[in-house]
Length: 117
Image: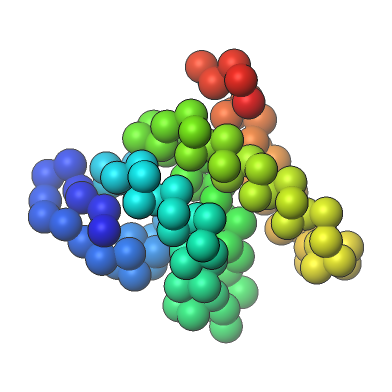
């Protein structure tokens, strides 16, 4: 669950509906890391957005841009992106556009105060 700065806890499915609003949530970093490692967020994202042409990568980019996400979680996200983009799924034209959608967030994360990224 994520907690809004001003409101009660919300379920994962709720904040997955609009990744652009992720900056308004505070996350339990340990729980978020487990959700990423176990691919729970990816599975839930695809379950809710798979047919809409909206990519999971937009969620990863939004998480990288979120001020509430800590260095260890951003490192995990970057590692996940590197692992996923090396597979065949990203070799077609659609895969390339999915990668391009993450590049600005990756660059911003590396330019930020995250020197170890």
